[in-house]
Image 1: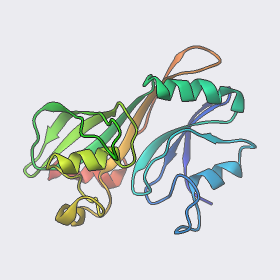
Image 2: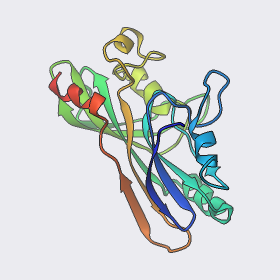
Image 3: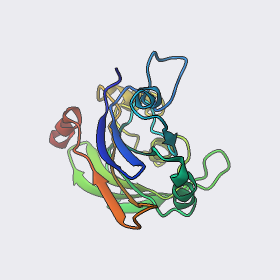
Image 4: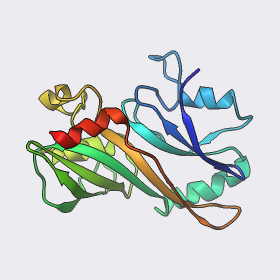
Length: 197
């Protein structure tokens, strides 16, 4: 059974905390995945965005297909607020926006530094768009790769045993009750040690 934590489930809207090392959806390289595990519990699961396999954190899903169009519209209109925690090599400016296109498409990533260590900076990162590997590629392109990133981080990929990226909070409007929902999750224990670097 794939481990995950249900952080919110009400009236057909589901938010789960995906563990590191588990793909969001079926992959030929893995025996298990989050989507398949969720389908064992819920009769219907709609997946509207994904997290990279080495990234942990919150995913927004539907368990009522009648909400699919409303959630898709919120994503399309950039009304869903997605905040990530990321530990990067060295020291970028206190805050900024990365706008380099990804695969020819608009990509916008906002970041604010919340902690500086000797050799690293911890940032709160907000996605405005949702391109594949967007935060990882933008950070690397800015010269501040994310620690533990085996794909884009070069030698930085060996500085921490896992990718130092965690989807920490989600804010969205519940389609059926019309309320703004905020869901947050704790930083995994294996990332807390980065505050002492």
